[in-house]
Structures are given as C-alpha cells and as structure tokens.
Image 1 (cartoon, rainbow, N blue to C red):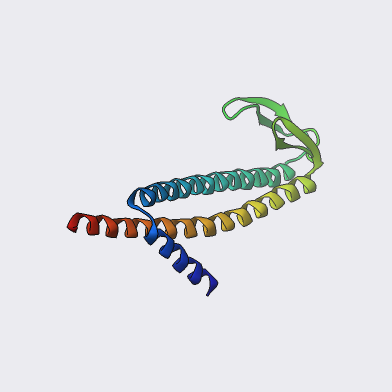
Image 2: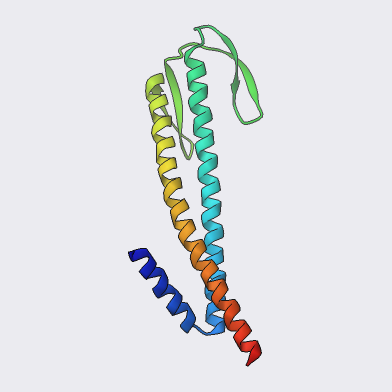
Length: 152
C-alpha cells in the first residue's frame, strides 16, 4: 500500500514539472536504469566466474597427487605443471592479493561470495524495476504534456 502511495505522489510531482524539467528527469531516470542494468550484468558475470571457480575446485579435489596438468597463468596462457598438494589452494581476493586456504575453505569462500552476489542481484533487480517504472511513468506524462502543448 505504501509503495502505491509513493508512486502516486511521484506521479503528481512529475505532473507539476515543466516540460524541460520533465525531460531532464526522464533522461536522468533512463541513465540510472541503464547503469543499474550494467550492474546486473556485472553481478551476473562475477557470479558465473565464481561458479566456474567452485567447479574447478571440485574437479581439482578429485585429482590424484602428481597428476600432470596445464596451469593457467592468464586467460590465454597455460604452462605444464604437476599437482603437488590439492588440499591447499590460492584464492584471488582482488587487487592482486591472494590467500592460501584449504580446499574446503576455498569452496566455502566461493559459495559465500556466490550467495552474496545473488542477494545483491535480487536487490538491484528490485531497485531497477522501481526506477524503470518511474522512468516509464515520466515518459507517459511527458508525452501527454507534449500533446497538450501541441494542441494549445
């Protein structure tokens, strides 16, 4: 109920705005929606990377000691290596920092980050939806005012 009241109040305020103010408000709202959608894409990409890392940890935990494998140095550069100790892994925590953890701690880290990202994703979806409806409402009001101005 409170959300409908707030939306009604916002619509009334937009109706009181001049054409120039309404145009600026609509442009600002559209820009905010685009930025929020970019954020959603970034969150989705990060969650996918963490899910891949979690799957890689699972795969690594099943490999025997001394197993020959290719070790990624970058996204496109791999070097041959031998698995020495699959119970200890390095976790990239960002900005060039790595933390040594056990395999279970590494999996737990990935799962916690995935859950955090999913929670953030849900919150950003909700905010994006609200901003989009406000921008759409501003567009409708702007069109009505433009029609009214052209008939006057």
